[in-house]
Image 1 (tube, rainbow, N blue to C red):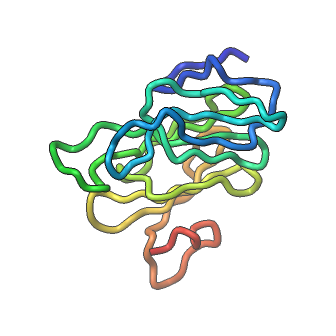
Image 2: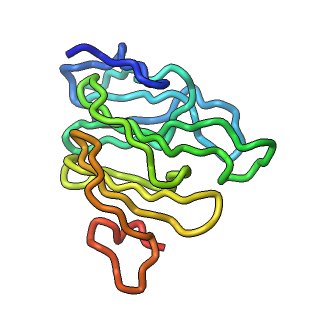
Length: 166
């Protein structure tokens, strides 16, 4: 496999033969209200690699199958200093040092996300600067959108969206 570099995601240090068990943000930038930096992945054997280098990533997760994902933060909107002013609507998903998919959330601010079904799918909740949120279900291998629902519904939610309900 050849590592890919895509929009702030440098996979040249990614280990393709070890299984990731933990991902965390390191080299944290001094940005109020955010934990933004580089993604460091720790493997089953205790060794670790940095998978990003531009200090613009956060919200990392590791699926049971070793798939790793994180959001990419964009620039702030103007001079506003609110927690909702730094969009992170891009999610990158990698496995064994290879970018599987890069998806844009329905709305610019990812409030929460995680892998489900052992890593085969992932769910993310996003919102604009104001207003209602959306919850999306994606296929991990391709990044294909499988379903989208509002975060608030009086009629109930599909099981995969329930943890993200408003």
